[in-house]
Image 1 (cartoon, rainbow, N blue to C red):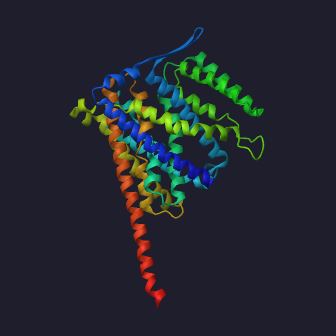
Image 2 (cartoon, one colour):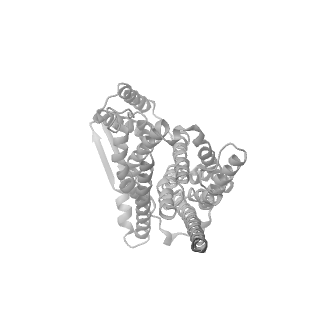
Image 3 (cartoon, helix red, strand yellow):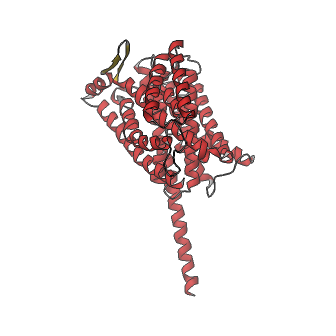
Length: 406
């Protein structure tokens, strides 16, 4: 368990660096003379057709509807494994991250609505600052908090997992439209088929892949966002081992898919969605209610919502402070949860996909401001904790030298 967690954090650190690189590259291109090449790539139509069935979407939507479905599929695999046999299977360990996640969703949403509650169109983005980017947050933690306790890392991971579950529910309830009964029926039939394969412990991956593609295509055509298909399919992948010495199908797929998601899918999503032309940004873009609601929601709402909820839960003895963890360390992690980059951009595209570029530019600017501030201040505090600890150890060691010599 510990080895798998350490591997996860090492890969997330590298993935976080790659995410930053892809985002900066997108920003540089979007603000250069080759911006039209960037826009042409994202608008390039990609067509898949079999008989009368056809999917015709621009590259950007293939990224957001297709590749992100694989990301949510991996999230579903990780959550199922942790819920069945990992640290999420221990109810005592769930209370604090669950309370933190709920507050970390509610407070940023309320702050966003405080800025935008009077505008029915703008208020549709209330969930944008409620998301946490697990790759960015964990990456920053690993880079700057290498010597912090493992329990704190598990707390951050648990909060991010609950955030992902909430994101799936929010997308399903609030960002689905024009539902097709026929397509939903096909998707449900496919899920029943996957449940049958799981029940009879079928170990042929091809069968799960075939039914999974059918479910994804049906959900894509149903009006429910296609990424939810990936999350749902994951729960029907067998966790039973065929032989005790071999990994289960779920663990095998998770291990194989993780590098693709970390090093290709999420960076490509960031590259496709982070390219905002800041040269053309006006004071209105920087100061409108959507931008401010997102930026304040991520930077202010996340840290205070999570930290105050944890403080109350611990003072009321509903939960305990993670072992070997201080309050300042917990506050630093609360700050990192304000890095909402990938998930916030994704929810923003769903909230305002019909509203034009003005709203989408505000989303990108607000997410960038809130996420960068959360990452910067979180990294600074974590670094200071590390420095103070090592200085304290050094001073203790120096203080013991005379006594030993005496």
